[in-house]
Length: 306
Image (cartoon, rainbow, N blue to C red):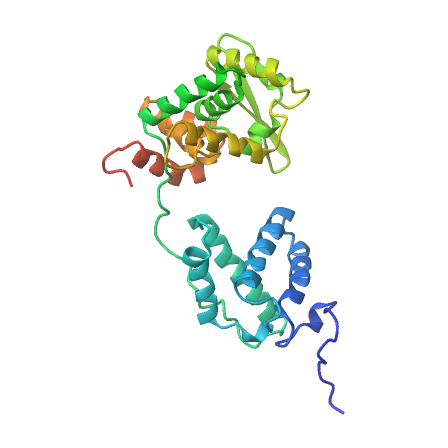
């Protein structure tokens, strides 16, 4: 009697259990195990898993693996951009295409599906759109509203301090969340120490601060009294604070950490700061800086910048 792969009556336990009739949702955990075995980071595994869950949201997690076609995957990507109702950045779109390609290539390689429907799905070419940044007048409006909050009936220096900290230093959200009072050197001028981990090696960036920002920090510390890290709340709470600043200042779009990081680079570039100094301030590699500098020049309104 010829041995044939039997359809599992339970959730497949190994790659050998996967076939064209397996439910999509039942393949995800085995895909996670494959990624970890390939040495992918937990961040990558979580991101790919989140992308696959969107397929179930779009269609049906109970559908068979063998039912996916290139046309359907393209429809899924169209839904991500225009039908889901949630913005899909160029970076997120590109990663989700990569997720599809890695997932179905794996299924095809282990013999679970006879064809790879994601192989013909094309990544988009061309430069990503420029980031949205505030005009100088809008920056003034935000600072004015932040000062209103700072001097209000219940004084709150945190919104203004947060905005100025990110705008003036260009640090990332994750870096802001790790800051402690020890990272502020009260010199003349004051210096912010940003510790950056790259390949298990810690590097430090030293960023000069305006003395008035340190004074604002002291107001914030007196009001909130954090014990260790400067921002004793969640990163999402800080995002809400920036969004509320935008609303209160009459800005027609959200203010985000990423926006302020771009604004910091553009402000320095427009002020004539050496590009390599800006790169070091942002903690970027020379390779990634090539494309970033091009965008900074365009955001700064430099003619002929590409």
